[in-house]
Image 1 (cartoon, helix red, strand yellow):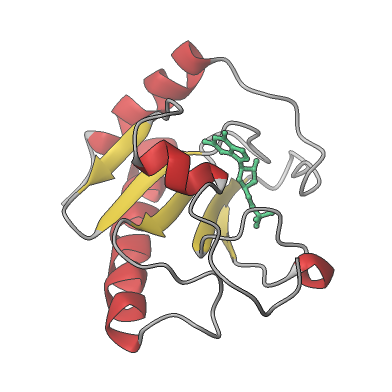
Image 2: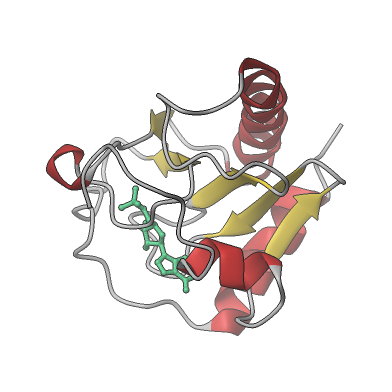
Length: 145
Ligand code: 5GP
């Protein structure tokens, strides 16, 4: 899918938000959800999405939604850092097929990084088991401010 076009109400994150597909939630409120990426590029890879917006990418998101999303990204990243003590954090966001996007519901990736571990490639990581993801989510959740 290109940068342009209509929001697909059956994209995988829309289905996750409707509860049709399970997800390991780190935290959520009425505006946003932070949940574990099921194909983590590193241990503790978290995605942050809007629960209300039909934005597909950074170009069509409402500014007030983006403001809430970025605050949620920072809150989550701080908890990831406290819980997992990475050496660094990569924040990623892709737009359009050619930009590397595969799910067309705007989202931000928080990927903890360690100096002595390579990050797996985007779209090339194996699926994680739900119990492992839940254990990580619990550690992150416990550090939320
Ligand atoms: P994008 O390539 O659009 O930036 O990122 C989509 C992300 O969604 C990828 O990192 C991918 O691993 C993740 N993903 C794809 N399907 C699912 C799923 O069913 N559940 C979860 N939690 N993450 C998913």
